[in-house]
Length: 196
Image (cartoon, rainbow, N blue to C red; front, side, top):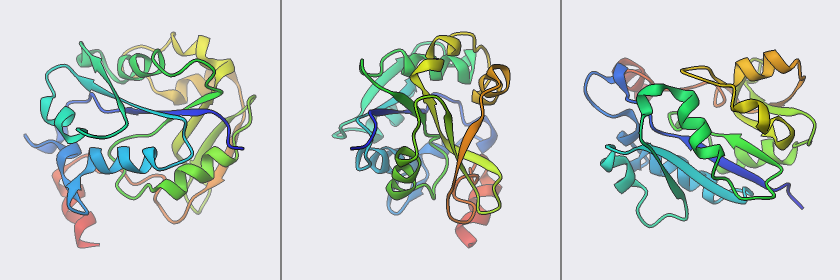
């Protein structure tokens, strides 16, 4: 039986490097990237899916209409990634053995990849996807024993800081090609990716 893992999709960022457009609303397979990411998580072995969204990001909220995905309002997304992560983690279901952080701007992550990482979960280790050369990427599962330390995050601190400061080893799960490291932050990134 799979571990009880909740997924948090931190989607309250500003897409500031996209030149005025929203990377999470870019079409992938005919639907907005944010919706596609949420669907992959919903159809996985995760026990709950939560997405953090800034209070003013109504288009992102609309992109999730009809999905079994809890939308967590982030009132001050300008405080950085840490605020977004903590807002989501604070609302995961009781009894969750870990939380998977699934970045919303990685268009090649699929349900099967999410399940591969969940299947390797251990309650005393961080589990992290890697590329096919072993370079660490996403998604990442943080075990419940580390939840008390996450409150120390601030600004744009990410999980890397928690991993380093706790001195905890990561269990790496190799995912195909570059799916665990490919994120699209700029218009040029999107153009290059669509060209293959």
